[in-house]
Image (tube, rainbow, N blue to C red; front, side):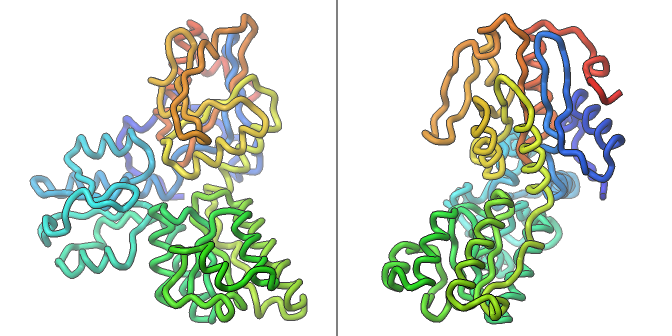
Length: 407
């Protein structure tokens, strides 16, 4: 796979050694068990896969190249490059300005953007409507387009499904930048509908099986379908694609459920006329990170720490998975780990930050911590969390000595 040129401060002395060792041991990625870092008073179970994926590293490389190649020019990002506060703060420190926030609200008026300015398209991609605004101004939208190739793969598949008269069912969060972009692209060739989870898929199935009316369906999904959407006409032949940061297993479960719904409605003999097989659009990095998280859950640990941006969809899903087994502490950086062992962490259910007192130091027994991060989190950030905990426990053992069973 391509090696990207990203700033050195994104790298890390601890995690780089762990990843290099695991890559040498398991080049084909067949082993999803975590790496044990045994430091005596504290033991880290480090997930097999986490951190920057191909699409994120590609976006980081292009963004910093844009900065280097355009001294003196105004450089804009359509919205957050990725959902990580440290990455976005560093880009701002290099003179980049955001045009919109993550909700699509305008921070810089379009009238302020000129053809001489540099505009970077973020990894999530953008809508056709926004791209047209920029091209009409004469802005170059190709040189620094960092749209993830796997997002573009979803768009291309949606276009093909549309030309084959499928309606596109998008599994995603309707207010997420990537889903807004995917919806915009799919709407060019096909009726499209956004569903967030299995509960909404079940409601969709209720209509297909004549259990709810078209009027009720329209009301239920208000604001999440293309103009002129006709449930009676457009839910006969469908294809499911996803926001790539959603749980791959959930997307596949939704697709499988809707397939069974179509079998119940139309019979198995004609199933290919009613739902397309779209499993090949699922993002490899989301799959790998999810599988590695499940590998963590096969182990025993006292707590789990997930590191990443609080508005990161893929990171939030890792928290949801780990909560099934461990007390989980979702932190954005080492600054959330306090000297007395307390942790300031984000509760995804209440949307609030919580202070849990002396979580790390309340027991005299050795502490085992399962740890991972989202695809938008630099290794240096998770490295900082590990180092901060090592400092609290006054650990002096070297990383090489601590890597159990992998030397």
